Image 1 (tube, one colour):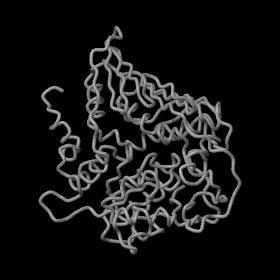
Image 2 (cartoon, one colour):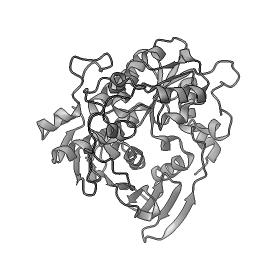
Image 3 (cartoon, one colour):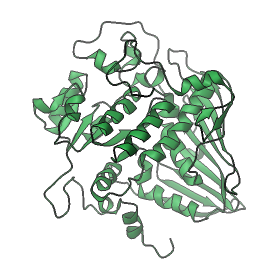
Image 4 (cartoon, one colour):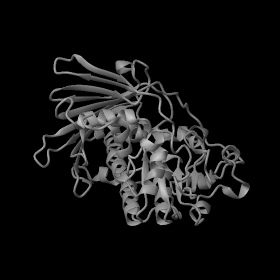
Length: 426
């Protein structure tokens, strides 16, 4: 990297202190203040954030008890209603690790309460909620970090920097993939709600549907009412750094997606197989760009021996980059000219970057504007798959121009009778 050491580059990106081990906790250097924060959602992803939390919140009291023990909070700071955290003036920030249908509603409420927000990916359940979250973040002047952790990973940062410096020429196409073997969720019937679960709170502003074991913990990902499928789950990472490497700061002009349930015979509503293509119209004299995303959830025959990765095709070569810590650069003759493996990074670098942004006033590495631009692709791909239509998208009006019925899927149906967490403007 010309005229830039690795350490100085990382400091410029706001992650150098964490890499150097200077901020393993949230204590401000040279001050007695610390960022006080609450964790909303104590499940599979939330458990990464137990240590250091000042509040924990979950509508499942069994999970809440585990979180309280691990974080060391007292009973008054282990709550089932997130409003208890937002109403506490001593709290500076929240981490939102709920199911997808709560991401934007909880984040918007937090912004309006003046709290900084770390929201897991995808930052919204639908496109309209992403618009409203971006608006809430800016109007309330708070830091909102999107949980696409590669944005704070030094290995990925440096690889993307190489792309932007022209190591493979002008990058025109990025092909990303998420290939793995998911479990069959089977079929189930509604059952009584477990005694330890506040199901009304768990459903929140989404449409109220009966409790069912295969659309609850973790399995909620595969239902339209609560999740965004694996395109919005693991695919969120790959799509984000595919777009980042292309250097695209815009929304697509056309979206095509084909797929369906090719393998699984179960109740999940989202596809297990999909190929999605996003085209960006040439603007400001630039040539068009394209992102291709491939998803197969029934095989372990990984491309380049990686379940997740991106190939960038440039006018002077190709780069392969995986969040698994692998990078290969090829010249125009398909000869490998550089190969690199990433070091194991601290697990909460992205969270440290969020805290640094709160303290310094710098934008976080995955600012909500970047989150909005990436999750837009997830939501548009899911709409194209559900309708079976290619979509023409106007990035100025942020509307689908060739299918009025598809425009209705930019938002969602909320609970009959309303709900206190339903975002204003949907």
